[in-house]
Length: 89
Image (cartoon, one colour):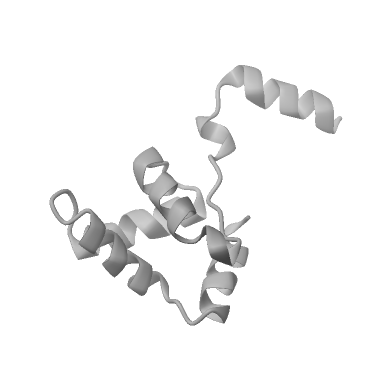
């Protein structure tokens, strides 16, 4: 899913990104603040940053909504990116 689809799905279910960030802060209170959770979450959803632990948490927590944060292409190994390009071509 892309950024707009994720945000739209969350909003359609009455969930704001800040609500997810608060929940993340509650679950990871010893490692992140609420403000940093919001920043990380927005970057994660947009694909600008990759945090495997938080992505796994997000995918498990919101799987029932059909929302999923996928690993950005720029993080994948070159072999996987090249294979995807060959398939698409």
